[in-house]
Length: 282
Ligand code: GUN
Image (cartoon, helix red, strand yellow):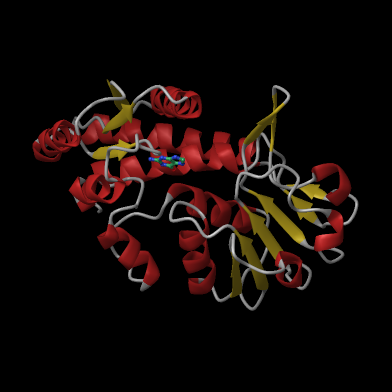
C-alpha cells in the first residue's frame, strides 16, 4: 500500500506558487489579494479560514479576513460582496460555508463576481466544469486537489470505474464532473443510495466525502482499489476521515491519510485559483 501524501505535494505546490507570486510582484508590481468572508463563529469554519489565511501568508498572497457577526443581515453581506466585486485590487473572494440559516447561500454565491469566485461555486463556473469548457473560470479546490494528487502518483483515471460517495455541491458533484471529463465511468452515491457497497465494491477508485467517520470499510472495496478520503471529522479529539484506514490499509493499493491527505491539497489549490484570478486568467 502506498500513502497518497497530500501534505508533501501541497508543500511542493506552495513552493512553486510562492515563486510565481514573487515574479508577478517583480514584473508587474502586482500582489494577489484574496478576501475571505466568515459569518459567525462556527468552530470548523474559523479553523478552515485561519488555515487558508496562513497559507496565503506562506506564498505571499495578501489575505483579508472579513469576520462578520452571526446575525449579519443578508443585505449587508451582499453589499460587502459588491464592494469587493468593484474593488480592482481584490482578485479573489471566498465566502466560507456553511452560512447562518437566515442567509440564502445561493443568493450569496451568485453575488460573487464569477471572475473572482476562487471557490468555483458560482453557477457560471459550475457550468464551465460541467460542460468541460474551462478556458476560463475556476475548478472547485477539493475536486481539483483530488485530481492533482492522483495525477502526481500516476494513477490513471481514464477508463476506470470510480465510485464517489457524497453528492454535495462542494465535493461530490464537481469531482464527478472532473472524473467524467477525464474519461472515468462514475457512480455518484448519496444519502438515498440503497446500497453504497454495490458501487464501491466494483470501483477501481473510491472517493468518499460525507462527514461520517469509518463509513468506508475493507469489505466495501475490491482488492487493490485506490481510496481517496475527503472526510474530516473529529472523534475523541482526533481528526479522522470517512474511511476506516486501519481495516483498509492492507487491502488497497493507494490510500490518502487523514490528516495530511486531501485537506492540504484543497488549500494549495485555492491559492492556485487566487493566483489564476490575479493573472486575469479567469
Ligand atoms: N466549507 C467547507 N468547504 C468549503 C470550501 O471549499 N469553500 C468554502 N467557501 N466553504 C467551505
